[in-house]
Length: 146
Image 1 (cartoon, rainbow, N blue to C red):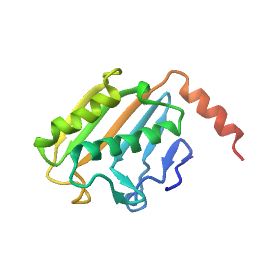
Image 2 (tube, one colour; image 1 turned 60 degrees about the vertical axis):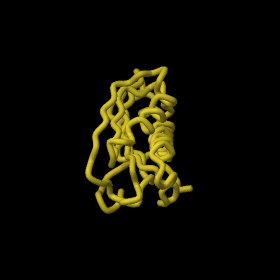
Image 3 (cartoon, rainbow, N blue to C red; image 1 turned 135 degrees about the horizontal axis):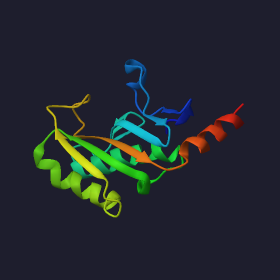
């Protein structure tokens, strides 16, 4: 398992493309956390290959793991974005979304794209989350780090 770490409000360690792009998996800005480009990967290996439901579950799992680094959960999610390579996969990805966020009902966008960065991937997701007081909590924690 790749180590996830918060550095100056950013979470790194989720994707082999972070270094290439000069990007982080997640970033906290005030009381908001933005998680981008969560893919169905475990140690760089695609999960649920060929299965859009399993890939959506794995991608959302990685995105929620990034949120967990800030102490947030699915209950804090206010927006989701799902990128699919095939429109036929909306029901499968939607089922995974419903299982994870049905009680929360964040605003959601689904976009069909021609392809993703790895041709074995059918799904990629993004999350935006909010928790009042998060910025103060993170600032206090940062002050305690060596």
